[in-house]
Image (tube, rainbow, N blue to C red; front, side, top):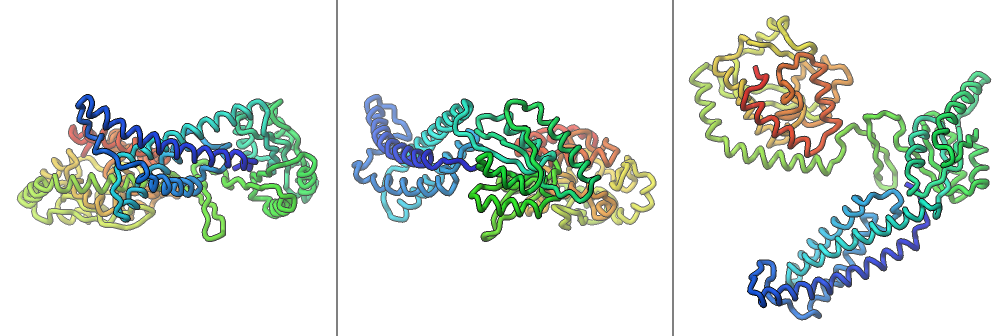
Amino acid sequence: MLKENWRLISRLERLGDFLIIVTSFFISYYGRDSLLFWDKLFGWNLPFAGPELAPLKDYFIVLIIALVLYALTLSIMGAYGSMRLSSPWRLLQISVASSAFVFFALAATLFLLKIDLSRSFILLFCILVGLLLALERFAVLKLLRFWRKRGKNFRNLLICGVGDQALRLTSEIALRPELGVRIRGFVDLREVKSPEEHAKILKEISEFRLNLQRYRGRLSRRVLFGVARAETALKQFAIDEVIFTDVVSVVPAVQEVVFACAEEGVRTTVAADLFSVGMVKSAMSYFGGMPLIHFQTPPGDQWELNIKRAIDVIISGFLLVLLAPSFVLIGILIAVTSPGPILFRQRRMGLNGRLFYLYKFRSMRINAERELPVLKKKNEMRGPAFKMKDDPRVTPFGRFLRRFSLDELPQLWNVFIGDMSLVGPRPPVPGEVSMYERKDRRRLSMRPGLTCTWQVSGRNDIADFDSWVKLDLEYIDNWSLSRDVSLLLRTVPAVLFGQGAR
């Protein structure tokens, strides 16, 4: 976020990376060669020792390609940018991801060029480089933060805004001295149109100063007023960067200050959290040369969502094959015990309101949906959803299927083709969604699932639709892959013992 004069550090890092790659090359070659020596000496027969390596000169092509690939990959991944706000975990990610890419690129290049060199050497080389690169950056990060905590290499910051966003930003900066940021003042860019409005703004500024008292001694509580004072502050306080917060109502004034900063050569940053809505996360991207700000509710990590989808396909595909004999047996029993089709197909709403057909083993008599209006008055679920104990439409064998959730098994096909997920909010029927309040529709922001929090928290014993929605939204807002695994494991005993099922 904050600009820093990091050119010298960046050049030293590039030199350090070069030395690490070259050193790792020789360590990997002679280390891999020594493995073979000790393996033969003691007769260990290590599976990864492999045959003797070719002469060292034959491996120099690996070093040359690796130097080019690492330089490009590390640059693309931002390894030579400012580390002021980087975490050790982020530095490890960059180093490991770069080494993984270089390993596969080297293997592919040697294969295409038909050069037969040891793959175990290349693997050892890339692992060693990745670890040493991470250690190098971690050491540099710790050294810089140690230096900044002692008052060196500070950046002067001017914050334009005196609202909640400015206070949150100030709190983060004041509590993290290792960032090397000194706030020199605040600017209120609002335009005064009347004496009453002027009095109101003065009162708000006074309250803002009071809130800043908790950071006494760590930042300036100077509050300036107007675009002209902001322009003066750029010269008077040697400002390195201006951050705009709470900008929705002062966009024209922000534009003027941005132009002034551009003429002074001062960097400007706009807080992307424009609307201060806690459940909405913002992110930046570029479309061509146009910067775009995105606002989205959780979950937003597309990488983890892709992993979730891959897990869905693998597990549902495996279970469809494994349970195929059970499908046939259940189908025969349904056909024998009650007239009608084996499968029940119903339109449901999925991700962001997409319509799809959900499949279940039929557990009710045919034309059961036509009887629903008559039974509405016996609904035990407060809200748009319908739940009823001892539903007269359910067949005797259907009760058994429902008790152990066997009627849900065909939805593995919905999971496999992408309409549903293994874990997620249960898919509602369109009629229920038409009665949703606006806040309830966020249940549709994630792919619906076979199981979710409410199913392992009493399942159908939950009689309040608002409680149901609350559990679903809590799952969405705190979603993670580990949580999905936990819910799947908790679902197994809930299904086996028929907890809360009807």
